[in-house]
Image 1 (cartoon, one colour):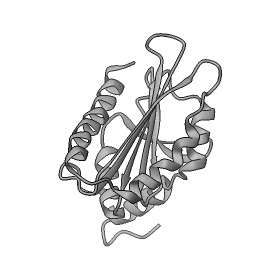
Image 2 (cartoon, helix red, strand yellow):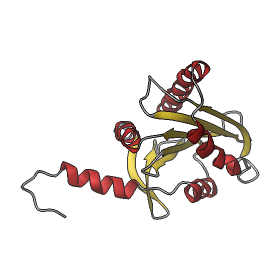
Image 3 (cartoon, rainbow, N blue to C red):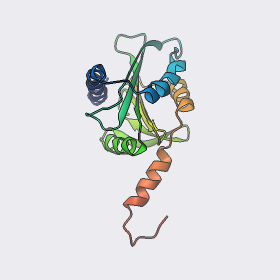
Image 4 (cartoon, rainbow, N blue to C red):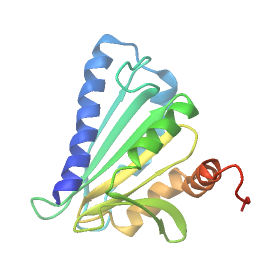
Length: 186
């Protein structure tokens, strides 16, 4: 894995750890629990070389560290080589505004490049070596898939089938908002 991907996974793990501590002191968030439970169908192997390994879910009624983040889920698949693994992270936000703020700040990192997966707009993460994808449904969920090697196409398709990407719509709206008032609208 490249150092940038490891950094991204480290940040997500830190969020998980902070949230786990918060969960011990807080009530669970029932809507987040229900929403994240839907992804149990993705606890499957992808091909012969990528086997499902683990799933961890944390939800909290209130999160003082990351406003609006009420649920986190991590799913991990291990490959046939010691360092081959793919991690899926799902962040669930109760409020759309909080999700969109988090989305905007996370996609500003230099390892994110706007791109497409089979015609669907997504963010490509660190295309050098191991890499991955990230997208949002624009309402509650931000998903990231990454690892070394990169997630296989059938895995990305399965996740996109469960969480439709609204990246194109959000980026068009963001582009319009950033246009100067006197410039012609597209």
